[in-house]
Each structure stands twice: as structure tokens, then as C-alpha cells.
Image (cartoon, rainbow, N blue to C red; front, side):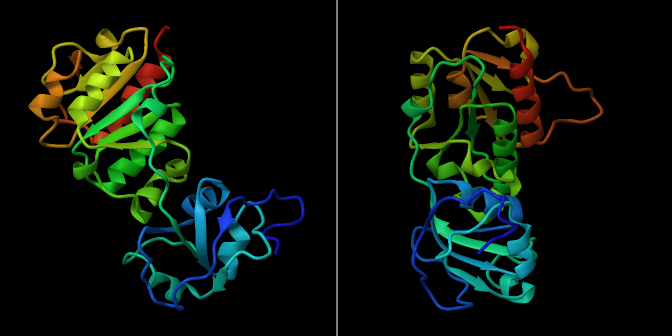
Length: 265
């Protein structure tokens, strides 16, 4: 079936067989449920995704930029039915997609040493909205990946995907067991590790080198753990005024990524 005419490009990806009954509201083990046009459309176009089922309103299908394969498992429903499949008050925009979680990405796969493609390291940033927003900024400024510690980061989810507005599908997300060891590996690969913290003396502009960079950000309030700070080559702050105590971590990440993108290399 066509979503928006014959000239639209095909929505790619492997469509799986239908699983589960209508309105079950539960994804099978290893599944992720995504919602909202940007998140769903990006997932459908991602050949690395294994798609299992799409619940949609006809208006939702019509909003997609592309066509679904003829045998794609789609179940039409009204907006109220779709609301039962997602978190309360989630803005599903007439689209809910069940798919397999993305395959693991390993740190050595993303450390290409490109000075224009920084790594973004998140220490205990657990809010899925913040992680999603950071993914979106990482995509906008060409970051190579985000890196989190498995125990102190949110799982892949519809909330992360919606906040990322499609960036979950294009920015590698590396999950590591030991964040300190990961920072050591970054240093061995030639990355200059800069921890962002308000108590630093130098500004980020002063601390930025010309080579590959890993930006390290901690959770709001607690900030980076001392052991993570100790694994940074430099600490830096953003030059904000005293009118505010600090910035939201996703805002800080966006500003830091802009600073990396616009520095002389």
C-alpha cells in the first residue's frame, strides 16, 4: 500500500510476523515500542531494525514519508486504542511500532579518531527525555556516538525515541559495563577527554584541543562522579551568567557540541 503516492521512496526494514493479540499493550521480550511520526518513520527507514507490527490510524499512515511493503503487518485502530498501547498521555500521532531493540554497538567500532566527530559520554544521566534530547543534538552536530554505563542509563524506549526525534536510529549508542575503563580506552585511541562541570576554572573554549574529543557530562545536581572526573584530561565550564545556577544537561550537551563543531581544526 502507498502512504503518500507513487513517487515516495520505500520505507525500508524487515517486517516480521504478527505477534500478540490486538490491544494486548505488551511487547514481547526484547521488543521496543516506539510512537510518534518522527520516531516511527526513522525506525521504519532503518534497515538495522527488525519490525514486528505497526498499529496506526489511517491519518497516521498518511503522514509517513514513504511506502510500507505490501506484506507489512499493520493493524488499523483509532486514537483511543493506540493510547492504550503507550505511556499515559504519550503523543503517538496515530502511529505505534513494535520492533526489536537495536543490536549492541561496541566502543572500538565508533572511535574513528575523526576530530570533527566527538564522543559524548554520559555519567549517570538517567532521564530518558534528556538522553533523547542529547541524541538529537549528537545527530545535529555529527557526533560519532553517545556512551553510557549500562547500570546508570535508561533503556532504549519509546520515550527516548520520541525525545530523540529520529536520532536514535542514526547515532550509535554504546553501553559499557565500566565507564572509567571506557574513558581509558578513549585516551589510548587518542581522544582528549573533557569533563563539563561548573566548578572548573577554564571555559570549554579554552580547554578544547584541535584533535579528537570526548565530552563527558554528569547528571544534573550530582554531576560527574569523582572517579569519572579523575579520568578526564581536563575539566571545563560553560561561561553562563550568575542568573542561573546551571543548565539542563541536554542543553549543556548541545552547546558543547556546537563549540566542538565550530572550533578551528
